[in-house]
Structure formats: structure tokens, C-alpha cells
Length: 147
Image 1: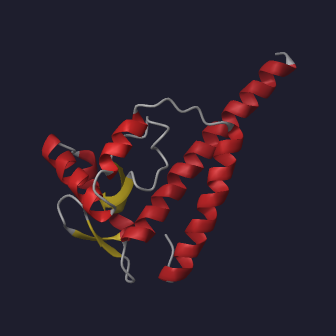
Image 2: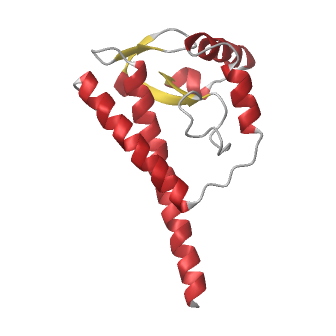
């Protein structure tokens, strides 16, 4: 294999690794952000109270959209059941929750962003990871527990 192909493969592997690390980091951030001081939160869809360790990161616009994949307005902590059984009605409830939590029109912005092409470079991914690592550490100190 020539050197250019090896370098390209190495960059692709690093990008995949960074994406996975960012997925995990964003999940931890939203779980800490959305939980109370005891580690409990209410699912934004069914309103069931669950512990942070039983929660999942729920994406309003799916992870396939690179523009919104790591957007903290797009991701919220919720229960596994609602996350894996997203119906049209649950999607509507989730949309209303996001607009009420942040501001009216947030989901419209997310809808629009998700349709725009986004090609993140290795440097983009590295910078996002550094930014979110700082945020995670700040939230972890505020909550006095980690996940």
C-alpha cells in the first residue's frame, strides 16, 4: 500500500474514533445537564423519572445529520423505551419539549440545519472534543458525581 493510502486510512480511523468519543461525550453532557443534583431526570416524552444511569441520549434529528449530531439543543436525556420506540406522536411531544425548554422555533432551526450538508474535518472534530471535554468537566464538578 502506498504512503498516501496509508495516511488516508489513518485519518479515517482517527475520524471514526473521534466521532465515537464525541457521541459518548455528548451523551454524558446531556445526561448531567438534564439531571438533578441526585442524578434523576424526567424523560421528555413520557415524563417518567429515571436515574441518569438508565437514561440515553435522545436525538431530535438523527445522528446521521452531521450538522446537528453534536448540537446540544438537538440531544436530550430520556428513557430507553421512548428513545427506541419513537412514534410520530412521541416525536411531536419531543419537539414541543425542546421548543419549551430552549425557545420557540428551536426545532425549526434544527430541522433546517439537519438538511444542510456538513463535512467535519479532523481538526473540527478535535476542537469539538476539546470544547466538550471542558464542558463535561465543568458539569461533573457542579453535580458532584460523574457517569
